[in-house]
Length: 207
Image (tube, rainbow, N blue to C red):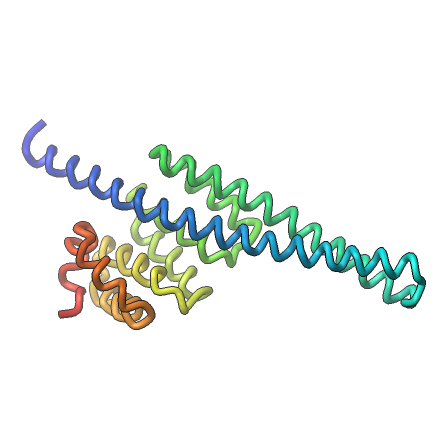
């Protein structure tokens, strides 16, 4: 192995380490977000179920209202089941990602997105998996979709900028960096400490 090959291997290893660390942070965010939504859905379903039970026993509501409540409960329960399935799939994908099986992780995230195409956190995870398999242009599209859904999420623009830099889109990366810092000024220190980001985005970082 010559020196250029060793340097390429070193950079690739460092890149995967950085992506794994950032991916782990997104895993936590995704699970907290998904878990919070799931708990709220379960609480709402329980409240509706209690309402239906009371309605059925007391007969104070009309038949039409009773059917409306019943349908609401069933819809909520289907949503809870879907949320549980999505979390299970994302958890599987995260395990594949941390194990270095990025193709399998990508497949899992795509399955999760079939359940909810507008889940910004899963789109972010998909973006990291696409970067890990050296598909930066596709990663840009995933991160763009995530930020369009969650335009208030500074980390989303940080991640988008990384993908844009990796695909040599420095002008748009500069815009994404400024947007990220506008939303969360604390990201400046993280950007400066991230060696890979600083190297990729050297021409886009604000002075």
